[in-house]
Amino acid sequence: MALEAYDFSRFQERDGSAVPAAEPKIQEQPQRQSNVVELPEQPEQQRQAQPQHRRSPLKMAAAALCFGLIFLTALSAVHSEVQLTELTEEINMASKSLEEAKSREIQLSMQAAQKMTDAEVEEYAVQQLGMSKLSNAQVTYLHVAGQDQGKVVQDVAGGSWLDQFLSTVRSWLAG
Image 1 (tube, helix red, strand yellow):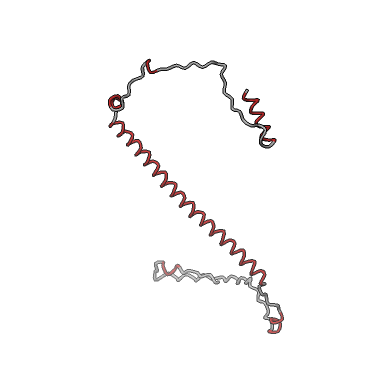
Image 2: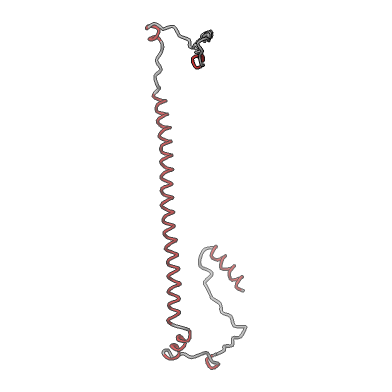
């Protein structure tokens, strides 16, 4: 590649008496050597003598198997994400339904409380059902002697040795 020199004298003002400037000398740089190495061509016989690389069926099968495993792994990951999204959506819908049911229950409780106050319930019980408030005449006391005990008698002779052992332990614990 040669360097180009610029002639600046063309842009300067010229007098009729001025001597044109001498053109500068251009030094050419030596050409760089190329790093490309050319190989001698091989004759046809040598080309045919070289073994051609063929892919082994075993290697191809292993590569296909690896690709299939990677594909199935990616497919299962996508399927898992889809299932997770669907379950999350179902949970969100159930939570929303639960919140609505709780709200509805509070609303109905308040409506029921407004319809019947405690005084109205008491009045209904006295007039319609014939009930009355608790009085001393309605209370009956029972006195039980401390020595009375009740025992369940059971045939211990029957059953396996384990049943007999458990029955004996129960009788010891009962008193």
